[in-house]
Image (cartoon, rainbow, N blue to C red):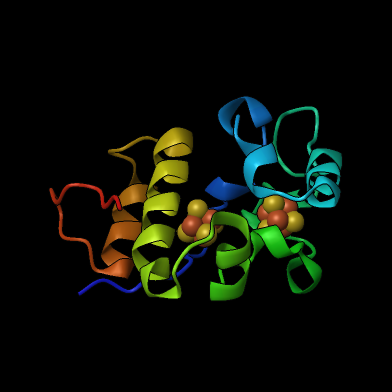
Length: 125
Ligand code: SF4
Ligand code: SF4
């Protein structure tokens, strides 16, 4: 049994470099895409990301596309709400793997928090 959650001191999904997300225009509206692009700093990280403690400086007012909810994922990916848990875990594992590595402490911490056993294959739908 796995249960998605965001773990503290991660921030992997706040690396917004579009070279790593080539399909942005397929799931963001034009307005969302414009906002997304406006958030990208020179280093590829979101301008609202505080790298010193790996957290969002505007968490309570962050854009919809930063929120893991059934409604936002249904709107962006046409995702059945029943699949949100596995999909969100898979997304986080991809971001964490890209940023910190498959064998990183961040990946181990995330997997432990959501209930993925060590050595278990990453989830995918
Ligand atoms: S990648 Fe997942 S665990 Fe890491 S900050 Fe983003 S939502 Fe949280
Ligand atoms: S607005 Fe916040 S949650 Fe969204 S990408 Fe930027 S730092 Fe991350």
